[in-house]
Length: 124
Image (cartoon, rainbow, N blue to C red; front, side, top):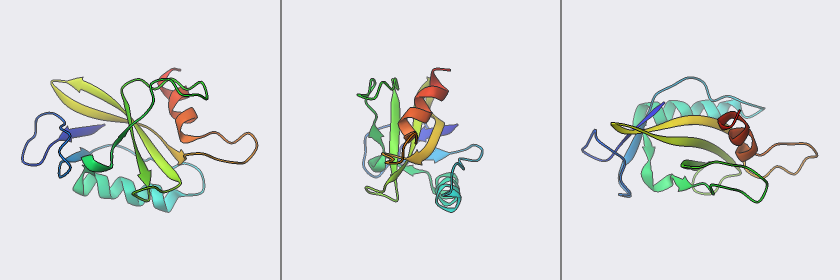
């Protein structure tokens, strides 16, 4: 889980560019990019996810993915070829639940995008 907080506040998630989302949770490692994923996880746990780097995911993607109330970050920021997808959950305060890490738009046959992996996990 990733606790959402704005700069100077422990309550809620705002759109302020200087805000951060504090990270908590387990491993995000998948595929052959473990060092990048692990470094991002450690950085988010230590410093939080910059709210300015969070982007909304399409609720229903052209590829058939279904990801309502989800956010993503690109790695490396600002427009890397990898991404993490989170589900926004509200339980008194805002939380981001980690769903997937992977290639945003893979080109190999049969390769799943981070969005397809996240959709399968969310809707399983």
